[in-house]
Length: 350
Image (cartoon, rainbow, N blue to C red):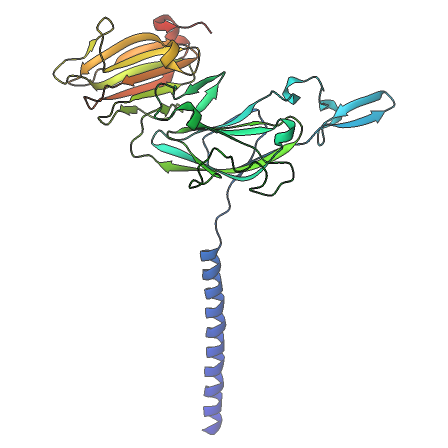
């Protein structure tokens, strides 16, 4: 009996040790899962105009070309590039005036937050970076200067960092940014944002992008995937624009603009403070050079489906509001194809 009791005690001790080890392993696994943050997806920027609708971390590195000699004479070669892809020293992309950009576009009801993780762009050699609240192409902006709630000088924030300086050293953060704000984090007002950079000789940067919900979207850059788009002014005096950077077929499905007791009508010949403009332009800002296909006002009492084909580099639907009415419009937009050429409402010079 004594021997049996000893054996039972021995097995109980083994069970307790096993449970302790098992609990220790489970607890460590749980702690590891709780404390380890998910890794961000890394994107390498290789194109001068990099357009993306993804979140994550983005990295760019530019190294100066190195001079190499051979029996055939001296030539320039960019580090990491094979001899068949030698850089031409006269290539304008290597010049100090070339400006490139990372163009972000999110869902229509989202805004974009950009955090600069690392900036190694030398101001002394002409290097410069900028965050744009919206997009910029050929000197024009989306949303247009007349349609954005902020003036242009507040939408474009330039910065750089001395070569080899620590984070926050040199001229970074920019002096124009208020002390109460975070100079490393930039936020857009709509679903489009841009990070521009000019790096003449060498430099690098790392940034991360996050998308956040926007409860009251106004200006929308069309990404071409949404089944329909809603434009609303929420009773405010503001202009809201839906823009697509391609020829498109626009269909106005439903509209409520201006006097609600008025049926939908074309109001090009009447000066209306509240109206919906459909058209196209060559540049990015439709408020300056929009070629109008139609101007609509009133209220639809059912599905309208006013189809219009806009053969322009930029297609826009612009809701203009005085603030006296809660205006809204539902539209669809798809890329135009060859079958739509004969039914073009507006044709712009390409």
